[in-house]
Length: 141
Image 1 (tube, rainbow, N blue to C red):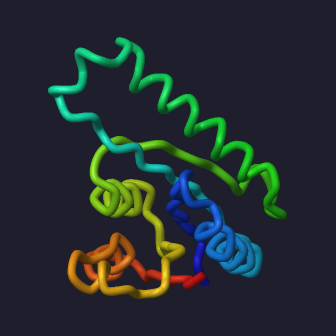
Image 2 (image 1 turned 30 degrees about the vertical axis):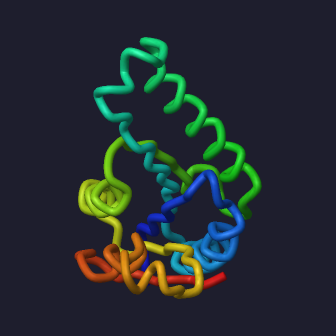
């Protein structure tokens, strides 16, 4: 069924990611597929760069990789079927790019319940659903 399952993880809101991880693990195990966790770090505006250490982006990437490794270690999926990546940029832009680059056939994304702010501003999940070239499963908390 789904051979490559991509799971975006917001490292600041793991409670939203947990139900999505559970669903993704089930789907990947059923199809003997691979899973990839992705965390997207936002870029700092250029005007802030003089106030942060030179290695700021590298330390952010290393922190995110460690967090993804901890999350993946607790999942009941063979380690050879698990990978992770960290990208920098816009959240949905990078998730969609990773899905294309990796050849994902499913994106499993956790999402808040809709609220007025998401109706007026939009959400990353909505944009991923709208623009993904592969199937998308949205898991609500």
